[in-house]
Amino acid sequence: MKEERPSDLELDRAWKKFLAGDDESFNLLYNRYVQVLFSYGLQFISDRELLKDCIQDTFVKMYDAREHLHHVSNVNVYLRITLKNRLINILNRERMYSRIISIQDILPVDENTIEKHIVFEEEELQKQDKIEKMMNLLTA
Image 1 (tube, one colour):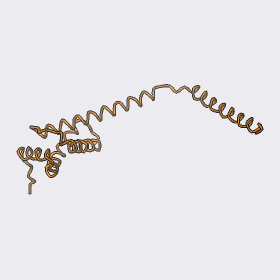
Image 2 (spheres, helix red, strand yellow):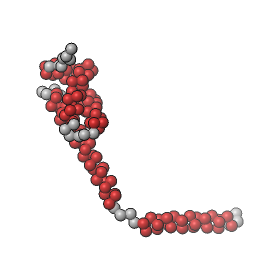
Image 3 (cartoon, helix red, strand yellow):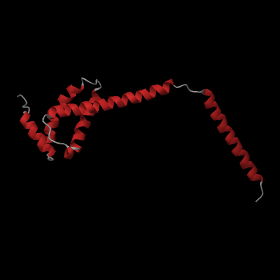
Image 4 (cartoon, one colour):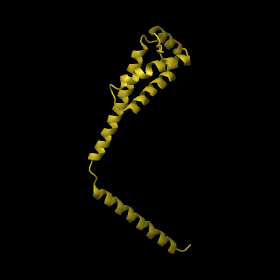
């Protein structure tokens, strides 16, 4: 038996009920659009697990913010735009992170500086040892 998909009118009603706090409507919207969003997201990213996380984040944020959301004329378009923005943010963050890592890889490590730091710490420890020995020689 073929699964019946909700009509645009039913989805519009589900959106309105969802905004009013109806969890059943949220489930209906999720079940209707999760696969649509997955197929759509594959156009932008090949990492399926990251895409699944972004889709889940999209629905969680939508659920959390439902009191502040307004009626939209096309839920499908709204969800696609929301997911696309989430993916863009994630990809930009990853690019920024990889850029920071690559800059650190390029920066030369000055062996002299590391060596100087080790010598300095050793000298400080020796000074502290001498001070402790001198303090122990003093009378009360």
